[in-house]
Image (cartoon, rainbow, N blue to C red; front, side, top):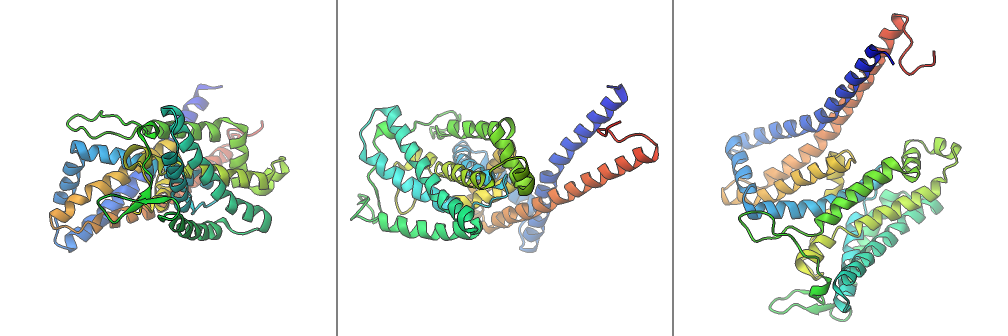
Length: 378
């Protein structure tokens, strides 16, 4: 291999890396500009607002809250990204994790087992429920051709109603002492996932489930980039006809992808359930599945990118609490989040078009010079 060819190859790799970083950076800068304009129009200084967010977000207890919420967001975004890699839109993560958390909490609160086994059983119940609930949409798609977007949205509504029916004192719930709330029987200490007091300046603990989230990210990378199953899944998402021609069972891949996505979605509620609340009650966090969609888009379905997106989203959510105290509408953060999602999609498309145009020009120059395009057969 000639040195000139190697230099050109390395140059394109560097350019590709810069372009990959350019898209999210451009999106965040653009979102900052839009938010600044809105702040100026409403009589609020942009720099002062940014300082408030950064100052409050750097407080030790807030840092713990940011990491904990980001852990939950990360798992949710991974569940969505699994479907995205195959062009499947699992909009039902919200219903899948809430139903999984409810039944896992009921089982975890009813059992008396050794510590590690107790946690394992609770987590396995959540994984099984999430996978089974998502498999309904998968079966409808492969057997009846029903769009997974429609079926998962409807399954969200069904999960909400089914969960409300189960969470009554006649079935899985008990009254929470000292309040009007109801919830499942508390999970005993043997079924709790211990956290880590690792942030200086506070005794608040980071969810121990962050270790599981990190392992999920590694497993996601290995599955999609180092296994035949991951290759078949990506090939099916790129072109079903080409996948069929290479011997891939497309219907099987669709069903398995939905089940895996749902199984990961079942884990979304576990950091909160096993690390903080220890019970599923009426105030259990909702809407995490829809946030996961935005973060998966922001992270471009890459586990490292999703981690950055989850931390950014969590930082904005937690830091926004200080804005109300300072008389600045906290909805400013919602505007910024929405602008980030919209602009990152546009930025990725612009970068993709620029990359395609640059590649076409490179090939044209080589052909004009009478040099075979790199990668072509001599």
